[in-house]
Image 1 (cartoon, helix red, strand yellow):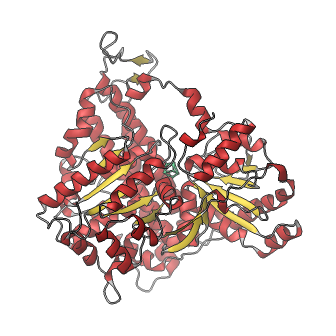
Image 2 (cartoon, helix red, strand yellow; image 1 turned 90 degrees about the horizontal axis):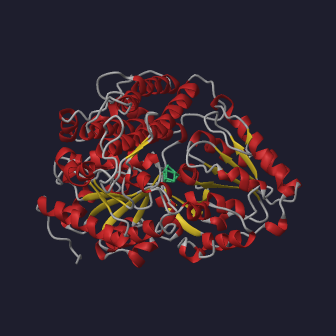
Image 3 (spheres, rainbow, N blue to C red; image 1 turned 45 degrees about the vertical axis):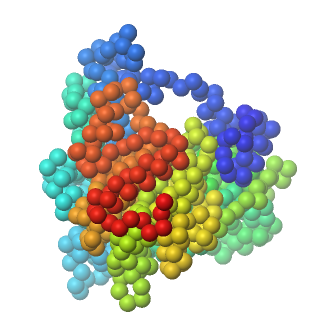
Length: 636
Ligand code: BF8
């Protein structure tokens, strides 16, 4: 691969990609090139391998097979494939939530080493919401019952998920009427697997209805539990400064990278990396300290709560290893490329897997358990320290690029931040939209994907929107992309934002792009939207608000689930790549047009971020008009 300039907008990544090419290493960027041209059937979603009469594929031009051997049409095959993707994504988020509930339960019973209840205020709020008694009870007792109540949401067989009641009343009614209301987190995922088995659900609309139900079980269930219980155990994030990009790696310190998703592991690694004995040991090997940095969403978790620096997003995981400066990379679950093991063999880097659910080739497995968390974390950090002496100095090349950022915004913090000294309220935010100082808000989330120039679509879309007075909130790899581009500092408002947004950012001291956390923290966006509706003056439902969602570089099944629960919550959503359904005309029509009649919002697929911004602006203006709001104060 030689056209590195075309692969990323990020200078640090380009620098390492050049080294990679020169030295003959292989990364996802190269493997993507080898993979082209893509399989058209897969891209269009019309290949079915749900039984072994096939695999079947539909001829998109109509000259070959029009249906599978069982008679399934292109629309049915595409719908089945899509909601199976969604089920996997919802399962990934929700299983993460389940693990956090397990940690809280074990902590409340005194069975863990390394965790306490740091977010007491949040625990009390949740206890009230979940009908858990708090008077004259110990924190541990309350935490125990809150954890058990959350656990019950996974296996619940009927009724409604508790946190769906945070949504506006009108939205809840719509979900009940359309049979979208999730009954139990696991149940909805299992039902997708049942319905997509050969010879069960053969109606694309009915399949999508169940997809929506399972996705809501993720957004207002599994992911929300993951976020809220993480706040209880690890503490509520508050705005915090840090730095990002590969330049955070240090030549004269032991570099440990945590990569994956669950804060249970990364949070105790933070404590272990500050252990006196280990710091002394590092010094005895000639290192000045132990430098911890994150990749992907686990980076966002420890960034939000500890200010730990972020080495990069999804497409930088291999590039971090190629710097030659990583002494140990430890991983848990999700978005971890299996190629890392092989790549680490070319360097001194130790690659350590920790989850019984996720093993990798060429990885050393040190199994993690919440019950023994801190001792295991110390053991892993010790391995990194011991490995420092094996670093091959001649292979070390750390890019200089790094950027400051502020992260740690939450639905709760918006109350404090905008409400002023005396009263916590969403009023000023609603008023800013009503008066037209703000045009509206947009959430930009999701992954990197080598099909598009790394970070380009995220950053371009964010810049286009803030320029037009749209407040942007970000999570996941999108947040890291914008952070590297310098959009997550208050000074960015002056440089990039429209006058209205600039005035707000200056008055409150916030960046024009707010970092809300990891991908499960997209649930913070849902809670914020529900609060905005409740505050009043902007309609009765989320679908009335001038807001939109986008995932310009998405690639994962989790992103499918997020996209669906965002749209099903009433938020118009623009995706940078189409869902793999375009081989089915009716399902494409359903998702991009008719969905609005069902849930008040639909999808658009637009790869060009400037055009995506135009679509979003048009949508926000349409919603403003419907609410009879004043024209945007300073907008074109
Ligand atoms: O959950 S944004 S590449 S890291 S899937 Fe993965 Fe996508 Fe990054 Fe986090 Ni989310």
